[in-house]
Image 1 (tube, one colour):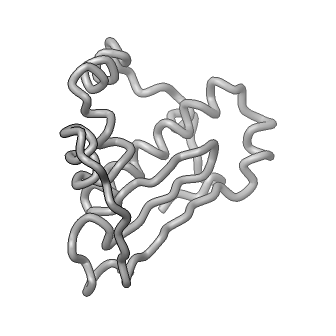
Image 2 (image 1 turned 135 degrees about the horizontal axis):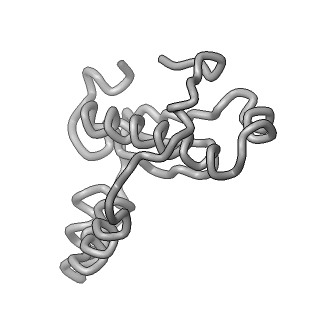
Length: 128
């Protein structure tokens, strides 16, 4: 767990990628972006041109994150540093989401939202 009072200069530096648009272009060309936006079962149906019916899930856990004092942090850092900080934070969240089978619903500004027990049966562990 990182508290922003413990941030270092490295936390606001970019993560270096020789060509950051290559992955995005490849995913769009293959239709893989659907899997970034929708659960796998939904993306599979959309990719196959099938109709997607609404589903009901009895037990899910919805996780919301919000950065405390984000406005204050944004005032003292340059916009580029804020973007790098958010990029590092949400890449870490995304990695944890993958590890714990949390479906990432959305990232907007300083907010991140994910849902468990949506794609896989996690009735026993979805809230842990």
